[in-house]
Image (cartoon, rainbow, N blue to C red):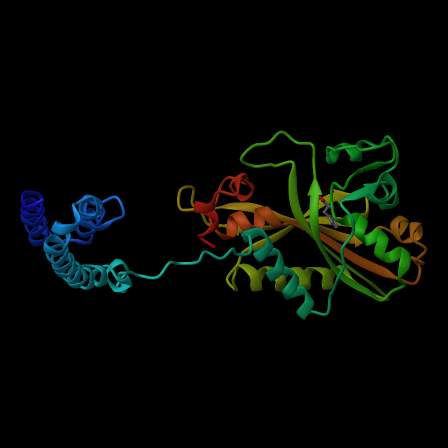
Length: 328
Ligand code: PHE
C-alpha cells in the first residue's frame, strides 16, 4: 500500500503540474478522480486492508485526496473559465448579411410604365391569361380563318380557348362591362408559340392602353405616346411612327425609337403597336362608333427593358440567375 500510494502521488503531482488546458484537465479527471479512476481503485483496496492498518492509511489517503481535489478545483477555475463565450465568440466579426429578395427587373419596368400612365389618368385593369378565342381574336376583328391570326402563333388549350397572345382581349372585357369614357392601362403576361431565341420567348409581358370617349383623335394618341417615351427613355429621344396593320385598329401604326448602340452606332427599335380602335370592335362590344372613337396601344415590356439596360438576350430575363437578378 505504501508503495502504491507513493507511486500514485508521484504520478498525480507530475500530471497536475503538466496541465495546460481544459482538455488536459478533463483527461486528468477521468484518469484519477472519476468513479473508475485511480483514486476510486485505491479506496477499494483500502477497504480490504486489515483493521489495524486502516487508521494509518486512512488519514494519509484522505489528506492526499483533499489536496489533489483542491488543486484540481483551482485548475478548473483557471481553464474552465478560459473557454467562456468571450473566447469562442469573436465580437469583431462582421455581422451576417440577410439577403432579401427584390422585385424582378420586368416587374420594376412594368410598375414604372403603369405609374406613368396612372399619372395621366389611366386606371389599371387586368384580365385572365387563359382566354376565349372570341376575346383574343374574334371580337378584335380577326375573322375566322383570316391570315391575320397567323401574326401571333397561338397555344391552343381546348377548342375555343387559348393562352392569350396579347393583352388586347382585356380591352374587350373592359368595354363589354363599361360604357365610355374609358381610360385604362392593362399590364400582363402573354404567350406565343415561337421558337425560343435571343430575340423571342414563349412568354412575355405587354402593357395595353385604351382610351375611348367622344372626339378622341390620333393626335392625342401620338401626344400621349411621345410623352410616355420621353419620360421613360429621356427627353432627347428620337422617335418615329410607321404605318402598320392590326385587325382591331384603323389606322394603325408602330412606334420606333432610335437606340444608340456602342458597336453599331444605333438602330431603330420597335417598341409598340397602336392605332384608332376599329369601328367593328366598338360594335362588337356594344359601343356606338358613330358617337365614340378611341385609341389603343400595346407595348412589349421585355424589349423596352432590354434596350433600356443595354442587354441583348431576352432569355436572361427568364433564367432567374441570381448573379443577374441581384444587379437590379
Ligand atoms: N396587340 C398588338 C400586338 O400584340 C399590339 C397592339 C395593341 C396594337 C393595341 C394596336 C393596338 O402586337
